[in-house]
Image (cartoon, rainbow, N blue to C red; front, top):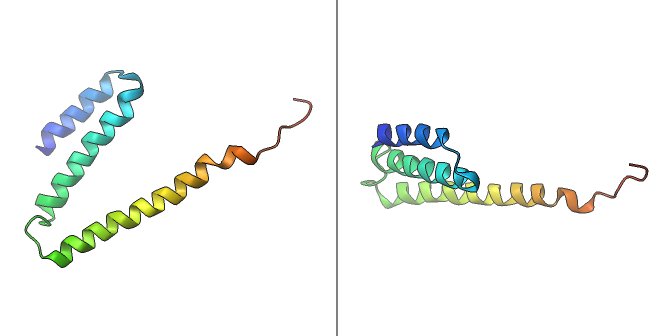
Length: 85
């Protein structure tokens, strides 16, 4: 499945999908990540503590992405125009 998804990633990179390029690429990457997490890291058949630890890691990642993107998206709001340009 990972090999098929890797080839699919390459095929999608060769096609111009316009605004959907990022969405399709991230969907394939998320699917590959879940396969690795569930099967190769054996989280699927692990204890509840291991599942909780993995979920806490993703929760922390979401918090960090939220703060990073909230800073990034508000940078242009407070810039004053430069006179003479």
